[in-house]
Amino acid sequence: MEKVNSRERILEAAAIRIRKAGLDSLTGASLADELGLAPEVIDNCFPSRAALTEAATERALLDGELQIDERIGFEKDPTVAEIVDAYFHPDHIANPELGCGLCALAGDVRRANAEIQSLVTRHLRDNAALLAQAAGGDPAAHAWSLGALSALVGAVTLARAVNDPALTQSILEETRKLIAPKD
Image (tube, rainbow, N blue to C red; front, side, top):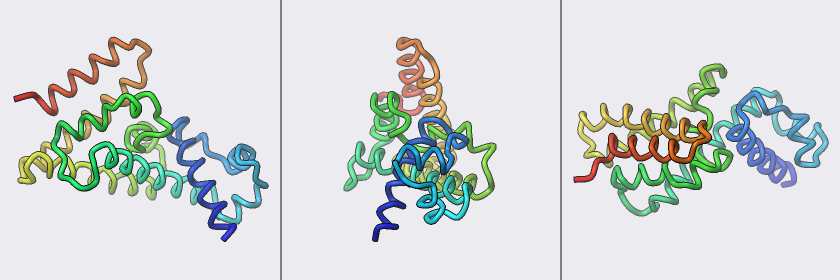
């Protein structure tokens, strides 16, 4: 049971770290130091740095989807506007370490191993499917959803990258108009 608890603590901290500082920021030694654990505890839970990074990436992606679901509401079929609101929520923009893994890791994943790229691919498809369903679920909605999700992730990434609040707001507002125009 202690190994399970240690593994969960490690995964939670590792997922936060990679969303905040990127995939390359994750090392067993620095994570052990942050958590007050002996490095051997991490080694016993994860046989390699790659295994730790893959598990942390999966956790970051799942945590992000959970936050989006919580903002939308689990029991309902969301509208496109509600999905956009969830992505553009001020807490999601201001706290990448607690936000979705797609937005936080998009730039890093191109340099990652095939396993991590496969994880991101699967989650991207799942998120695009949610948008497609919200847009009507037909073939045109599925085609549109990839562009819309790309715009959402790009807008969040850019909104986090600039240090001008007015520009941040403009990025989000103009992207919102593109994806979920008001009738």
